[in-house]
Every structure is written in structure tokens, then in C-alpha cells.
Image (cartoon, rainbow, N blue to C red):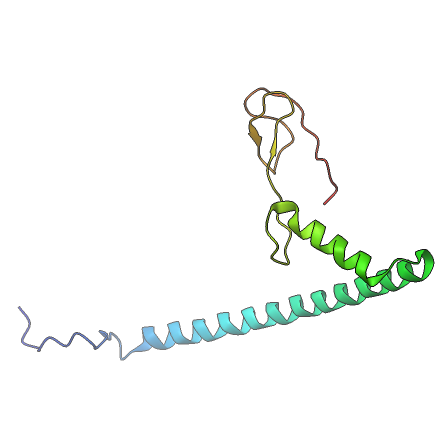
Length: 122
């Protein structure tokens, strides 16, 4: 048994705390990488938003569509998964032959082997 007193809130150190220093440095590097990835994704989202706005502006000018129509259509699309939450989620579809749920990753029913084609490009 050790002669040192039990200290439940102290972390054990070995090698002068070098392991903790390395873990801290690794965590800082991982945080920097995550921040860089987040910045890149934010840039992509911003660009997609501009592209959508440009497409909507063209469509509105060429077709005479209104803001109310696009807002209603956005809500309709949002509700396709049964939730009005500003997101679209793919809903698993049932096999046309046997009625069981088919994975979103495949078009073949694992139960009856029927070919099930996606009903939307999205």
C-alpha cells in the first residue's frame, strides 16, 4: 500500500505531466482543425444561399411567381417528412411489392428482392 494520501481531485502525473501536455496540444490542434472545417462549411453554405437567391430572382422575373408562392412551397417541402422544422429528412419508403420499409441506401428490397426506384431526385 502507498504512503501517499488519497487525493480524489488530483490527476495522476507521470513523467512530469508530459502526457497531459501532449493531450492538451492534441486537443488544441483538433479544435483548430474543427474550426477550419467549420469555416469552410460556412463559406459553402453562404455560397449556396447566394446561388438559391439568384435562381429565385431569375425564376420570379421569368415566371411571375410570388414570394407567397415560394414560402408556401418551402413549407410544403418541409412538411414532407412530417415535421415543420426547417429541414428535410429522407423518409424511408415502403417496398412497392411487399410493403416493408426499404433502406435509403439501396433500391433492392432485402425481403422480396424487388427493385424499388426512388420517387425523387432529392
